[in-house]
Image 1: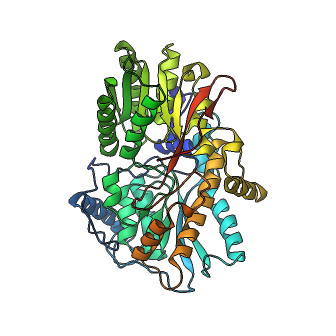
Image 2 (image 1 turned 90 degrees about the vertical axis):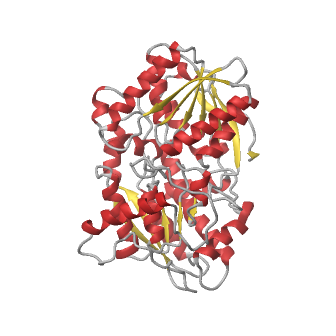
Image 3 (image 1 turned 90 degrees about the horizontal axis):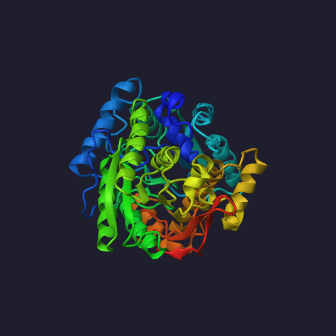
Amino acid sequence: MVRRLLGAVLRVALATLLLGGCGSTVQSAGRPSSSGELGGATGGRGADALSGSPTDAAEAAAVSAAVAPAQATRSPASAGAKRPTVSVEAAAPIRVGIPYLDPQATETFTSALGKGLAGTDAKAEYSAYIDDLNRRGGIAGHRVIPQFHVVRPSDSPSTYESATCAAFTQDNHVQFVFDIGMSMNFLHCVLNGGVLAVLNTGWLGLNDADMRATPGLLFPDAMTLDRLARLQADNFVASGLLTRDTKVGIMYFDEPHFAAAEKVLEAELTRRHIQVVDRFAAHYVASTDDVGQAAGDAQSAQLRFRSRGVNTVLFVETNAWLAGAFGIQAASQQYYPRYGYTSNEPLANVASNVPADALRGAQFIGWRPAQDVTDSRALSPGAQACLKFMADHGNPTESGNQKSGGLTVCENVEYLRAVLETVGGGAVSRSTFLDAAARLGRRYGPMATFSIDMAGRSDGAAAVRHGVWDTGCGCFAYTSAPSAI
């Protein structure tokens, strides 16, 4: 999100906005193909199978078709072709595919967007952390070999996703991938290409059905959009943000996963006798040309909500594009509804760019303390040790994005280690890896969130805290202890 949404900022490319909101995560996190098809049929599948629904197959085929001509000098087989998974043999090295954002390009983008958006150099962070891990014996006797692939935000998503998939399934046959929030096209491509599992600590732009339909995805500290929608209704009613006198407006991305979650949120609010008087589907930002339309949507939404008496606004999104744009536009017109946020809108970035007067009365549900609040006491000892390691190795940890980026690196590596140690000796397959993640349950002590539980789920965020905008400190602050969900 940005303070200077209009004018020169509208000339900034798609990834500017999106990369700035999360430090190391691309905005399209988990979104489907640009065709707008909603993937993810329900129903059981074998843990090593990825046959997919018709939509899944179409998405995978689209990536395969894109990869083939672009990688003509590589293996004749397309990167998205179905291959057996690449197992981890006993005592053999573990190869991990790590896409990372070009730090200079990202800094150029985010510096034009607003305050407090500085990110990190993920390649430098992973390199330092994995080198230290290998010096201490690696993971369960396995040396970890990172395979890096740079993602340039000036490229189109189809270009960088195809190239990244080919890098991890053709050029280097990795067993695991640390995702940075690419689309379902990419996820299907690498899983069909033999990768055992994709891990991502961050946001999740998918719903429960998508996760059930795609074995091999593990999002340890994230929540699906529809699970979060139900949580929003429960928590904001319990906290008193929403009452029978409240007139709610909901702003969401005009994209099938987000639209489906908005319907869940609205149904849950209606069931609790909360009045939703308006909803606004905002243009999804998927290319440079979309930025101006999305900013215009924020302006239109605040005008329409104000005219219809909306006094409380909720969001169904990731990365605070809608929350930031709406808050800035509304404040410029002296329209001050109350806001209900979640960790899907990085609150450190909201606080840095939305005027403080606009945030009075705001409440939030949080599970990512590094970007929820500025109080370092909210961070676990493990999180503080991770950030100290990053700082000691020359990686900045000052902004919310920088803290979150460092913790993402530590969490991805440490969660992978915890699951592999739970597997025990012998070869590791997709089935044994996912089974071990489920058995690990809440025994893993996370860094980027409060509690993780992957038993029966692929999105593992298992505890949240409630919070408010504190006018005394001019910051977001927690008002409750973590509660299990």
